[in-house]
Image (tube, rainbow, N blue to C red; front, side, top):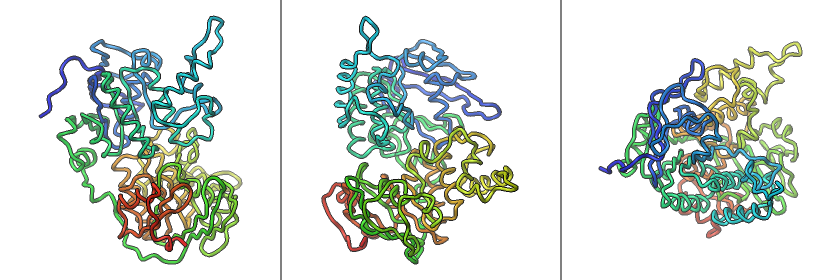
Length: 509
């Protein structure tokens, strides 16, 4: 058995507890991070991981417990105190200023200045160029953040953390929106940081990353640590069992449904410089996955179908009827629903209640005597919350207080409330834990059993292979393969995503 590292932990949290009103978020939680070690923190959404991280980062103060950095007892009243002690955090969702440049975001509040207090942009841009080059990304230091992809935003957050020269680096789902090459670049950087004795806390829902990168695993459930062991002593099945008490076979409840009539048909969709001549069909009772690397044009195709982005050419039909492009309201009336990739920016109003978010797409149905019925709002939210296993106490609480997985369930419920014929769902389980993934997959299986057509955009090959009836693969704005479920495997999908093959394109015509 692997021995505990010798010496003093870089960071140690002992017996921490934290409550918010009557909700106990942490109870007797402990964690030790050692120099030169990548430590995985696992658990379902709501297990207490985010609260623990916010205590380490100085966002929250524990009600009880002890925090030590390099053996010295510390109390962080603010995030600035945590940063000054050598802690840097990359949160699950980017927190950037869209109207500032990449360099200004990375050096926010600590820009280099000359003797007269003027910002030294040349020096700042030079350092940022070096940081971005070390990450292997093609971004300009003076480029505005607005319009960048989620993947690029996440890279900027990573660069910001690296620029702080932290001794403790906490990464909360840093790879959730990154392509495979970008993940490999990140792993290379993390391994270099290990060599400099940085302690790294790595929070992920992708278990393959745990085995590829980490040396130790801590598993949380219901606000407490339930397991801690060297990664070398674990396997996927044992981790899942410790987290949620279910085996992997229950993950993908694929519905055995014979596809029915064509619900969505697109022909020759083109947006110059983004995607070209995209054609496919999705039938009732069918899940069609749109796979490919980040930047291949998958999300852009979905946005164009739904009317968010313009089209230069092509035809869209819903249940056989032509759909006028460029108007989301018309798409909704025709029976389309779109669950976006970025739930926080595009799917939710974080300051509004869970009930209001869940009913936002159907408020017209809830109006009585010119006023929105609060009772009807709460009833609708409760119905969909029960169906999707939403973990939330009070429907009137702000949706921003929910965990990432539960926020995703609210977005899904909001669109399912419109009773769509076709559900387009972009990265359905990005940032969602193992248990919540199984619940989302179960909901999708139930929807196709009821005759819905689902277009699922996903970067996670296991869920593509586990849930899709057909896999459409995009490469550089074009569909490079249409692969039936029986013929799909990871090698074939990745080959098409990298432009190495063209498979069965007759299926998409």
